[in-house]
Length: 364
Ligand code: ATP
Image (tube, rainbow, N blue to C red; front, top):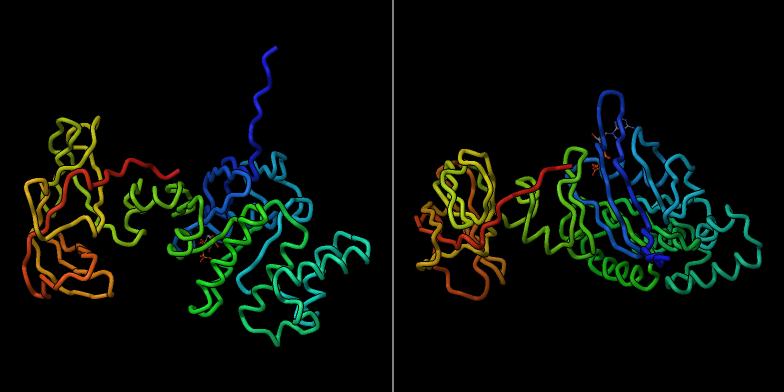
């Protein structure tokens, strides 16, 4: 007999989820696999379908097509309380008339747990979230950071398999966000609960996510670890959504030795790639830090343009150039170098073909 191969169970699987509102498609064939204890960030511009996807997972919306599996069990038509999930909203949705302790106890009370169990567990959770001193206060008298902890404690008390978070730190002061992000990441790692975190902020997604899922117009454009999304954007949309990329569009002019020569309105450039017919429409990108104004023989791609602005951020000096096709070109110089290019100056920038990324993905 062939021994059974143990397959690691997925915490969540979406298979071709589609959700329409009248004629409008808010989520269009979204498929996703979330491994046990993964931190997943759904990232994308406003209106791309992140929240609707999350609401389908939560059971607050029923998809028109597709299947949702949680912990290997099909739950597509199950109500929220029969799914092994909890949800935390941007406004925290705390009950204003209840004390902190009552708010935190709510999930266990809904599950009709014995009173003694609830009292003990609430105490434990209040302590571990360091909000025990606030137990008898009402949400209205708490700071944003404290309300956030209470909301998190309330969501996590039932120990769900998955915590769904919709822009959970969007309402916090900028100065608090970094601390809260670090705390949440540590909490997620400690508990092993999978987090599905919706955000339009790429810094949040890249610093927190094990898996970043970039959405646009109701579809997934690319999913992968943060480094992959940053270094190898699969589509022109992902490249332009991620800070620091210069995106070019053009047609394949020549192809040889795994290099394509692509003609764009800003000039012709060499891009690694093969197997494309001459004349094919392509797009590619190069990161702003991979450009140089001290060009050598290996910087086969060159572009001469006028610098319109120089911004100095301490660790990086960003130069903005105007390309001949009217688009902007960004050139970042890292480190404490003396300024070499001033606004108004015309300069030639170069980069190596191997620092150029051909976009090979199709949104789906
Ligand atoms: P944001 O970051 O602004 O919250 P999002 O990516 O989360 O955006 P969704 O809230 O999922 O986007 O909305 C996706 C699209 O579906 C939007 O165009 C929105 O207007 C539309 N939509 C969402 N809910 C409904 C609804 N109940 N009825 C009609 N259209 C809806």
